[in-house]
Image 1: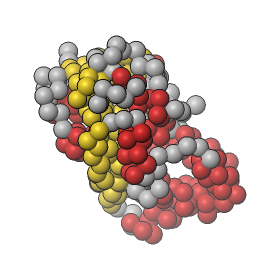
Image 2 (image 1 turned 135 degrees about the vertical axis):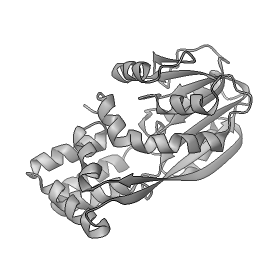
Image 3 (image 1 turned 180 degrees about the vertical axis):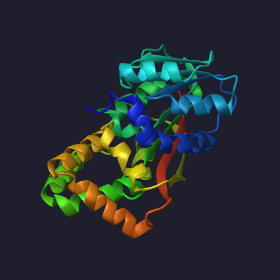
Length: 268
């Protein structure tokens, strides 16, 4: 089951989100915020970046997976941070509890995104910020694109079925759709920006090994398909990566959509 192994997730996606989080915060800005909510706090990457950006800030992280809450508690050792169990569509906080609410790499996981955004607005004071950031999974995450090419070369019918399943789910797969969601939830002063981050990769194994930890739905799919093809996906992926980047160190650049708005007091 994905999202039960935070250490594996930190290796797979955490090294990307650690680069993205400061860029996201710089775009949104903290202004005079003193208390901030981190929705879908996961392993604590965004909370840590918020504390780095404003050491006196109080940050509350909330996540629906108990193992991630405990991992974050052990990883972010600051008296200004705490982590609680809870879901985005029923946040366990009173109205107007925070000066700003952030969510990093969470929007695509929400079963009811509009309800979650309404909840974020409810717990944020009038005039406070509600901001989100998610990867451009269509064209902006090269490690996933490389895997998709490798998987399709080995098991095209399986990949086609999975793509059809994913396509059937509601998705905010463009920055315009996310901004429209913010507008529909009556947030105002909406701003948007495409953010890019680069990651140096030591080798093919450094790129591929985290896939096999099964920390996300895509990683589980990668591991199971590789097992089902007797390592065929690994061989295909290695061939594609080494043909494109060689056998040494290389760099990948990922793209994410960031959108922020302001709670108007009429968002609920």
